[in-house]
Length: 443
Image (cartoon, rainbow, N blue to C red; front, side):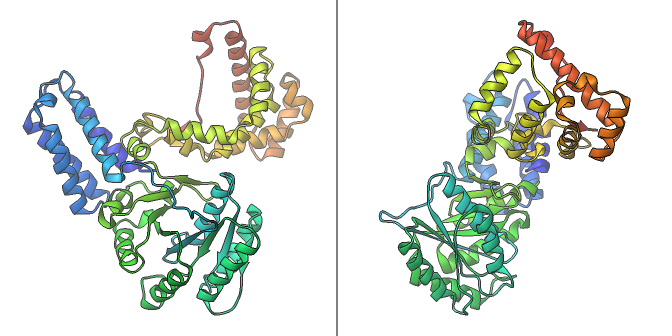
């Protein structure tokens, strides 16, 4: 997420931090470079211009120029202004005083609108709501089937009617929700490959008849300024309440994220960060600004861990670690817990300094898959007592996991090192225990 933008900004910040004294001239030079980087990232030129002006006003104050660490202060000013640019604070979904809450989802075809509707239903269900999905996209082939399939996976009911009247379907869905005591209704509307009058009229009619409490506009973050232009067109007809940026995990530039709120004056409320149905995050401007500037996002990382990790199993694991009794079976369990948090690249991307990983280095997400396959190809006894794994067993494990004997050897060696580390840790020798920690990163 924002890899290219983040790395380019880090290069500028590195030079800025290295300067003992800062003048108006080199502040102006730095900001010109940042403006160029923002424009390269497909940020709206008016937004980029205003952002630089706002930073410059604060950066040229005497308190900054005379500071002992002016470079750090300017970076802090850039962070503060970027938070303001992204929306200042988290924006919540509006809910009805008397249920059900009606949420209308709109956007172009291909933006991930239907998948988002299902993700939102899953998100709200985890928060304690009782949602219903309404399939009002009658134009795209298999749109209703897609929503029904997603609803079945999530165990969330879908109201579907294969008639040709989307407005009637949406109204009938609300009646059904009231009868079945559902407190939240999410209506998936039709999109097109481009903005057209027929689509706009249909979604406007659905809005008029259903009187939604929240209208969310879904847009593909990777389309840059096209996303901003589409948002303006939808906003003129719908006056939506919030924006959803999908596919943000694949957006290395960040142009849409940094432009869209300022242009349409509506908050970003959710971001899609992966294909899985739980890969949806509320939008926190301060956390996103922190990721863009290479400061990481530890808060979101901890929240993901708290959601996915089993507390009881974690206590048992802690006890095993204290006694240095960790087995490959335990290692496999923890590996699966980590995978629930998302891809390894996403997890590493939330750590401070992730933007300093060299461009030619890549986080090998497949490494975890290979490790899991190797351990699953072992017998239960081999997982508990890896010392019994001789040459013939290693060949069998490699064949069963679709890997090589060398990869099996590497895993066993690393696990042996980990066990030694745990023994040192249990004896209190922290410094030596921390040696040899590795991430599956390939150069």
